[in-house]
Length: 112
Image (cartoon, rainbow, N blue to C red; front, side):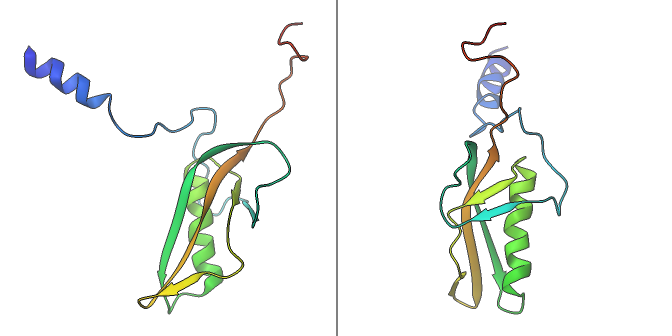
């Protein structure tokens, strides 16, 4: 019994939870890339990183970053530099995954 309680407590401590409003999207989904935070309101989903061998093109490695955004349910990645970082035979892209905030159908104040 005690072991079951410990298991249930540990099972609830799984790191940052995925935002249930934004289910995973298929690989290759459309992602808008921004150097700065976008002007439109977004919900941040978390950091994303891609690390690729130098034999992979920058564009293909950027697509790897965008696919991570898709897996998180995002449609935006921001904070992406103009060029990837290069070190130790790798190219690296990074940014913040986000999803464009959906406007509520309710009028301001939340009631009809």
